Structure formats: structure tokens, C-alpha cells
Length: 217
Image 1 (cartoon, rainbow, N blue to C red):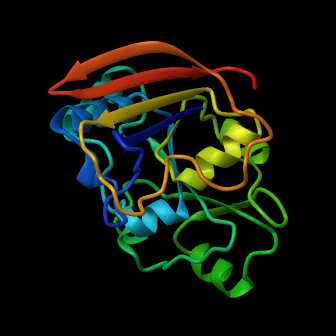
Image 2 (image 1 turned 60 degrees about the vertical axis):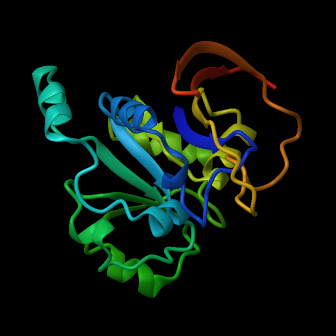
Image 3 (image 1 turned 90 degrees about the vertical axis):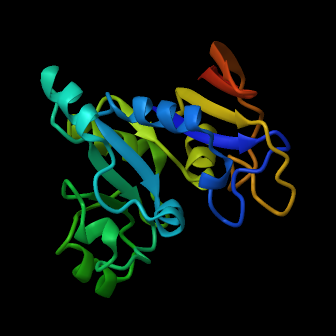
């Protein structure tokens, strides 16, 4: 269960509500390489609303790399939304390269569910909120072992609190963003901080690319 985020040097996860203002060319290249071997790309609804995620999420080169290794040409895509506050006519659904898996709750609005089952496979993963353990179990049931998540902060917070985040790949951009951009982890406070072991470090043009293995709190 790998999470990938970018942050400014002063801790901002977004600039004007989006993360793309923080990335560097090297970050974008690494971003693509992390997606390349994934069984599934997992994102939260807030990230999709902010970033779009319409159309192909891997390049033709990456599709060829996957096919040469016996993988489906495009990773599966899973979206977490407890409320189903989503537009079934958004490009995320209408231009999806594969039919999305929509992970939600039994308490979600029935009308929204009826509209979304036309464009996605909807699976309940809890009653009041989508539970990380159930999300992970559902993904495993679908054959997805290498899960690559690109946010958002609430999703990372929930998986970390549940002890189910395995890795964090963090791009640290050489920028001071200021403003009110949130941090890469959100939601409820953790009972105790989760430790991490640094297992990889790269640098280019002042940007740092850190790979951590999350340890038990």
C-alpha cells in the first residue's frame, strides 16, 4: 500500500487548491514511473474533484512496458467516496480507460448510487465511512496487490491511523508556498505518530525524492 505525495519545503501539499504547482520535471517523471507497475491506482473523491483524473493515467510507453510483462495495459482505478458526491458525467467517468471501482458506504445516497452504478462498479466498504481494512480487502479480492495511492490527505490519514500504509514516496519541492495549503496527511489525529524508515533518496535541481517504509507506531 504505497502513497505518493508532493510537498513544498514549508509543508504545503497544494498551491491554490492543486498539487501540480509544486511538481518539477523530475517529480513528474517519477510520478509516472510509480504508476507504471501498479495493479490499481487508488484516489479519494476530493483529489478527483480537484485534479480531474480524466482519460489515460499512463502513457503509451508505460502501456507497452506493462504489456511486455504480462500486465493489463492500464492499471485498474479505484475511487473512495463515502458520500458518492460525484458527477457521473465528469471526465473521470466518461473518459475512463478502464471501468472504475467505486468504494463507498451503505449509508450513501440511494439516488447518487443509482446514477453511478451506470458508470462504475460500486462496492460498499463500511456503513458510515469507507474503512481502510475493508478497502484493502476489496482490492485484494479483485486481484490488486500493488496499490498505488495518490491521495488525498484524508485517505493517507485514515490508512496511517489503521496501520495499513506500507510506503510513502514524498517529493519535496524546493519552494516556499505559504498560504493555507494543507499538509499531506489529514483527518483525525493519530493516536501516536507513525515511524518511518528512509529506504531511498534522490535529488535533482534542488528537489528531494524520498521513499519511506512505514513502521509500527
